[in-house]
Image (tube, rainbow, N blue to C red; front, side, top):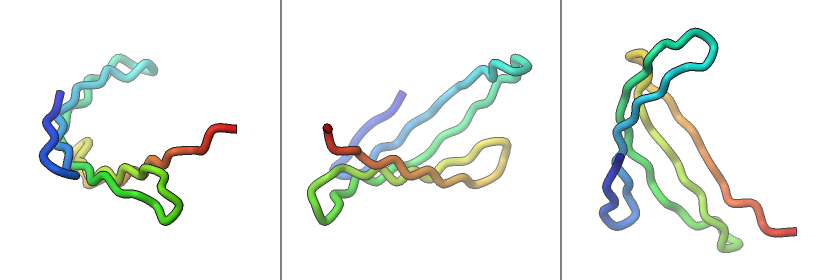
Length: 63
């Protein structure tokens, strides 16, 4: 679940890990960016297991 304001997305999440059924909760903030060639990049800063995390997701051009 989340909200977007401008280029910022705030999310709250719950995951159940397939390996052992552990429930992981957290929240985070993501920034939407455009690469120099116009693709979308999502830079996610969040916390999981009490530790800060960083995830970068970048659009791949269609073949």
